[in-house]
Length: 117
Image (cartoon, rainbow, N blue to C red; front, side):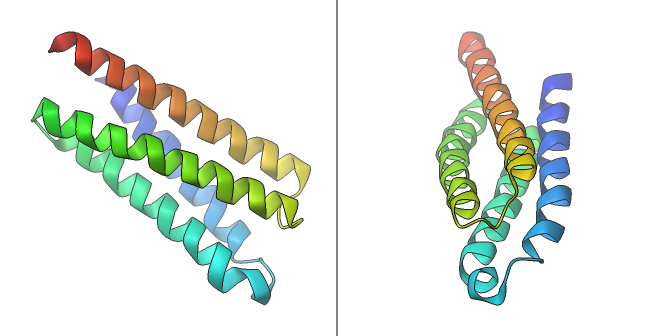
């Protein structure tokens, strides 16, 4: 149970860190790439909260599978932002590290749920 709380907390930390950074994107990128990243990270947070509070294991598994794909999309958008020099190397490293950690936690939660079934 504690792991699920941690994944929500990690996702919350990512949202809290990312949104102010994206708000500083140049206008050319803020309203296309920035909006996509913002919407995706907020959707992920909402989905992890939904998974945490859903009692049905099948629904949890479905949400976590969907989140895996969303995390991969997020990784590509963050990498693209870095390639456009919108994130410094340090910020890119921090964001990528959080995404990798969230991905590992997502996989661990999925594995745990499958073993229960």
